[in-house]
Image (cartoon, rainbow, N blue to C red):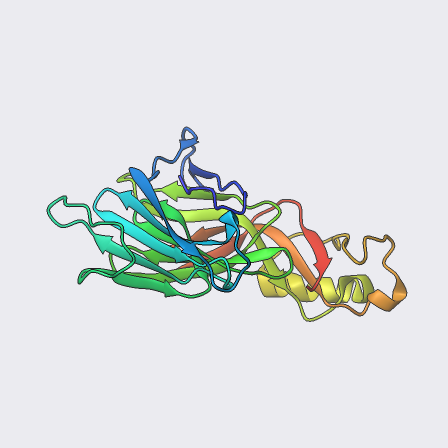
Length: 254
């Protein structure tokens, strides 16, 4: 299971079967780290002295793998994330310096979320339109295979697994931007969203967040819109995103 970040959000990973696979039992994923080590490296020089403002080195140990992350709270984004294979079952030491087998997955901005089977997930330090960018890496190739914006208000990722236990797909609430205003342009704008993202819903979704007022004030109608909608993603052989039926929400760009 993906560990909760210090910001307090709960990440829930469920082993589920998506639309194209026959229905099976739903259960929790089991990819918790075998153990985690946190090392306090002292006060960040960019912040006032406080127990909360210390640099933190975190090491996550999984079968065959260690993930290491350095987080300085005085700088936006995690400083770096690396992975180190376990050679002959020997666990690398949790220390700031890097070993010969250690590989960088990210430098700056991207923070570690967790591991799910053969995949590693990172999250951007900041987002937009109530969405946050998530990157998916293949642990064998050490390469990014997918990236998308996922709703922050309803951050939940569900995974589909093949018969041999590998991840085959994901399901979540996707956030995308449009180039028109739904409150101002109505159906014409909504048709552009539908065509671009393959949406089946015919009715124009109601927008909220324009200063919290409904109906939307005329001076704010000009603001272009972003929507959140459910999708399923086939990750292999090439990622393919498909819109699902379900509630669609709309908000102004932020």
